[in-house]
Length: 206
Image 1 (cartoon, rainbow, N blue to C red):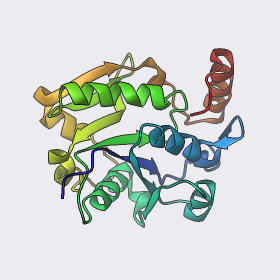
Image 2 (cartoon, rainbow, N blue to C red):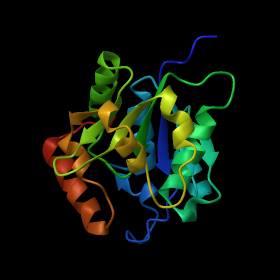
Image 3 (cartoon, rainbow, N blue to C red):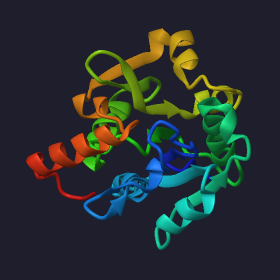
Image 4 (cartoon, rainbow, N blue to C red):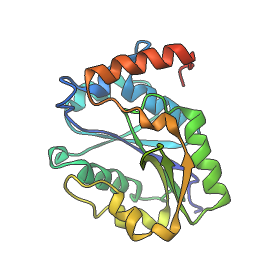
């Protein structure tokens, strides 16, 4: 059976302690961040695995009606690495693993289908490379990993994300300019800024 072309792991497991409430459920134009992110991925015709943890029932409810697969991480409190590993273990379940997978966060509201499509197009040109977003001052999610890196990602643990994988394979890392990814929602003021920027840019919902 041939590999499925594309999937995505969407991390939605954290408690958002700095935000003061579950930011997965914070709304942009009436749409919870987790649903908005899942819709953007689905618009790229990718299978979506959403990793839940804190407030899993509420996050699941916010995704009702969308064709996504839920993967609960009971060890979410140990950090992002645990959630990445849980998501990629889910991708490796039979019958077949996708040939490449996006790694996405729920708290980057300026990242929509158009931005994810940039990563996908670069992957098509360089299918054996890890494609990462250049935020301007740093690089990071959303990223796209070929299937050969899944096993390594399933071994992540604790608070460290995938940065160690990128460092170990730096010769295989390709960047895509994505200033939109620089805005992530960690605190309530970030949410206010996102609402203002999205309104000013008249960004349509994905």
